[in-house]
Image (cartoon, rainbow, N blue to C red; front, side, top):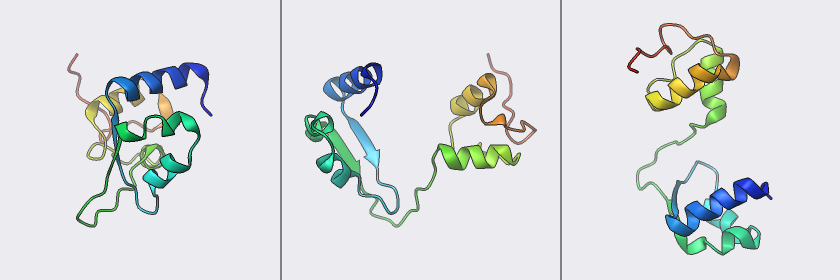
Amino acid sequence: MCSPLICMQVEEILSRFGVVCVQREGNDELEMVLRSDSFLQRFAERIIIARPTVVVVNNIGSSRVRQLMEKGLSAKFIVDDSVLRYIEVRGLYNCKLGSQNTLPSRM
C-alpha cells in the first residue's frame, strides 16, 4: 500500500479525472487493478486500459531512461523535453549530460 500522502493524491486524481494506462508488454494492468486491494477497486470504472491494436512494444520506463542516460546515450526521443529538464536540473540518475541529452536553454 502507498503512503497516506500518495494515496490522497492518487485518490484525488482518480476521483476527479480518472487515468488512462497504456498496456506494457507482458503485463495485464486490468487484472492487477481487479486483484488489487479495495483502494484501486473503488476506482476501477475510472481506470481505462489502452490496449494497442497494432503490435507495439512499450518498454519505456524510468529504468530504461536511466540506463540510457547513465551510458551517456540520448533519451530525447523517448521522453518529453520537460522530463529531460527535470532530470538534468535535479541531477538524477548520475547521468553523463553531453550534447545528446543537454537541452537548449529556453527559460
